[in-house]
Length: 393
Ligand SMILES: Cc1cc2nc3c(=O)[nH]c(=O)nc-3n(C[C@H](O)[C@H](O)[C@H](O)COP(=O)(O)OP(=O)(O)OC[C@H]3O[C@@H](n4cnc5c(N)ncnc54)[C@H](O)[C@@H]3O)c2cc1C
Image (cartoon, rainbow, N blue to C red; front, side):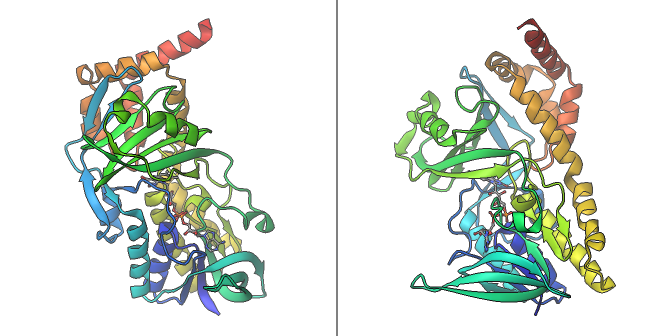
């Protein structure tokens, strides 16, 4: 019998495991793949604050960024920076592995090639049905037991129906490839209907290669192929794109992230920045909150749904407003026409926006900046003209 079984060795699962193991609990992490962090489909940008707050391992950091350049659909650009390092780009596979090593150093046990296929309640524990995959592909079913379970399976919801939990309702599709490119010195963000309707595309320098991707409502691979031929991208490509990888990103959260003895964390719970689809930092934060809640529940000897409801209250206290404001901003941003985006980017340096960025920009928490932006003249005029355009058409 383990105290806690964590299903999934992504950042959210490994943070929960590290935090629980550090408190002395017997923790087992199950990962279905033979290696932690493989395969990954991610740009690996993580807000600087998370490294300090959670003392995250830094070995996988490639470099930091203090600015990003935004490109309008008509080719205008504005470099936006707050004068401080806002985010780091990591080798994502190595990041996940070092998160796992840190949890192991605190005493957590990891079992690879073990897929959780079902959860069932016992009298005072959860039965975790797993399939262990051998090196020859042979599969051995077995049942493990734990007093509590943390589900950190990422955007994979196969275990949800049997638990009576509904998966998040809204997803983005993201597609990304690594490309040899010249002249990409900072994060580049591309906006506009042709590139990524209602969303954005990116080029992120990450060591010798550049991560080029698109996130979108649907058809991300189609949009990425087109983006790779974009005039601002194509002429700088020196080495063609490697394999295009695609993955879903939840941008709404589950209605309930706790059950008797079971907590959902990370992408599994939809704990993702609605504005950008970034989920590493929120997953780590919520993994940590899950560990603190379980610690308290173990001390009280009460792992019931009522006791674990504290988890949801606490993570919503941390990021609930961020998610709501982000959702509002995504809707408003999606209403802007290509002309309005172009006007905004062209006018950027003549407005009070650079000052707002310096004062309020935060890579992971966008609420304060969005609220300041909403109060600014330039934004008010934009939204007003959106409504006028809509009511005329
Ligand atoms: C193209 C793209 C770019 C992105 N870029 C960024 C970015 O720059 N910054 C950012 O913050 N976020 C980014 N994201 C989102 C980010 O990758 C996720 O939010 C993050 O990985 C979520 O972490 P997690 O621990 O919840 O889940 P995951 O990292 O998905 O980990 C879940 C783990 O659980 C394992 N697993 C699943 N089911 C089972 C099972 N039944 N049994 C055993 N193991 C199981 C999986 O194999 C996996 O290892 C990006 C996503 C995409 C698609």
